[in-house]
Image 1: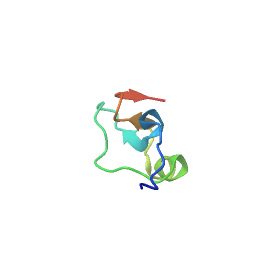
Image 2 (image 1 turned 180 degrees about the vertical axis):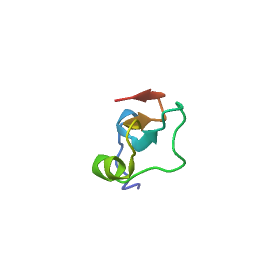
Image 3 (image 1 turned 120 degrees about the vertical axis):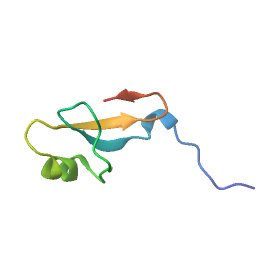
Image 4 (image 1 turned 60 degrees about the vertical axis):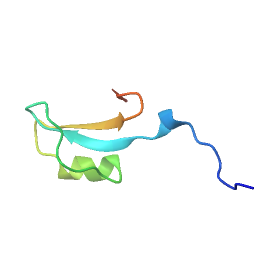
Length: 56
């Protein structure tokens, strides 16, 4: 019997930083606050969902 609980894959997000060139920085962050602290002016913090390819 499995004890795993189902979770909606649409809720699985990663916090990333988009550079001014439109590319993503080569890392992910544990929180939006951590990404905002790391990001430089002109960079955008995003929550990305790899399952549906959308951002929030």
